[in-house]
Length: 300
Image 1: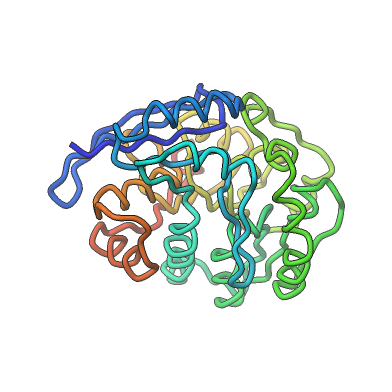
Image 2: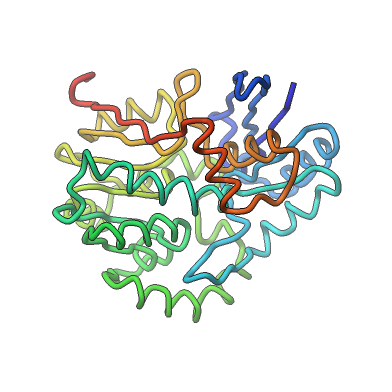
């Protein structure tokens, strides 16, 4: 049996374990949270190294992309370098392929040219942001708003790319917890002034923890496009009157696993690392990975 483990800086309350059979292989998927403790995460990766087929990094990005340039977070490199034998991935390869493809597949259900989309962190999901631009959606990139707490909405992908090239070499050297909620901070909901940007949009897309953290109390039936949702997250979305949830990764035993888990799964099935964009797309096709749409209003 293949064994894939996501080592996450997120809360251990979200831990999960599931067995699946894919392409004739049995695979054990696990998610282990370390409650924001970087040293604990490093120790766990060292313990798993050579004993599992692939490791995913959860709750932290190893790489972010902007216009074809890749930037590495210093804290994430410490985690990745803790493994000497087992490949370590963060989901960025799959974000660039799976999520971009999902936007185009959803074109038969969503009229993108008439849809306003909020992306709280576009540098975390640059492939998604590019795909939304390709289909003509009106997008608001919230990187300054949600990442730095500055009320500066961006509506131009090219401007975002230029600013990313300027700022990311510096930001990636900062402690990751300054930029992204880790540990128990992921469990806190803090509705505040950022809520007006949700209400501008028809659909909010991207990382679940960014989306959840500042979601207003009443979403008025708006849609959310994300991944890594649990049964508890579904209850939260219904309580905030989200009308529709779209997940880019499949639901397994009641939850959708993160892109880092799914990328680690593909690496384990392939038995090699790294995979090219074409190889990722090939596995996505073979596995039939498609966005899943859940109408929350009907199930409320």
